[in-house]
Length: 353
Image: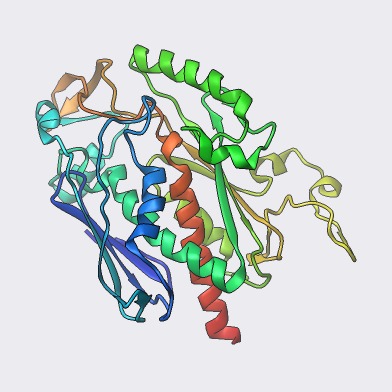
């Protein structure tokens, strides 16, 4: 399997499977001299972790990250920064009944058609467990961006199913509820909705937004190295992502040009429909990205599917699954934003000086 790496100057490679002995990542291109500790990375991993509330998968991994290379005396050395996390709470037996079946909505069928082989244990490489290492790598990028450019990145759950959650933005509340919801008044409604959803055995999608403040102007390139193109690619590489918007996104279709254009004055821009990116290059405004996540496909509700012999079968997925994958996606989209921005900041420095 190729394409386990992303980035240009800052390049991240992840490895490992959902139910394998461990998962890990290697970061090439991280500058030397950055102070980083396993504890800082564990803090970010804890934000993504499952099993913290009744609304997510009850798989409880320790996520005890080990930095196995690239750090000496608490600082990065400039060599490959490698991190490893052991899987400690995998229950592969939950998937025995579907080892020869293709779950609708999953990567089971397409992986098998491409490789002629698949790891049925929790989806193997296609599992969202892989995103753990993106968050670990993102913790490094976030700190570098904060130190070198004062960039601050904040994500939030903007919509869960039919419930829009960000009509009122209380930034402080995002980290104090299990949904990363910016409006405390919405939390009870989300709790009730998820309780009913979980009892029904069904799932639902979500929208996660992320904003990066203090992004310097000039990052990106006009043609094939567009900052927004790389951000869209990064977000779409996250499991279950089905759509990405930059700034006004699809609302641009119904806007008039006089409304959409972000007029400029001596005091700055009068709007940010562009999402902080013009012609593929950052404008110095906040970079704003929105990602849509589909409903979880692993359900205990029976459905029709095929087995490896092409026979129609009834499929019921057992095990521990998120009824809404978007609930835990906020730290992941933040990590991908950080990694892309750090990569482009280093590209800019390499070309412009």
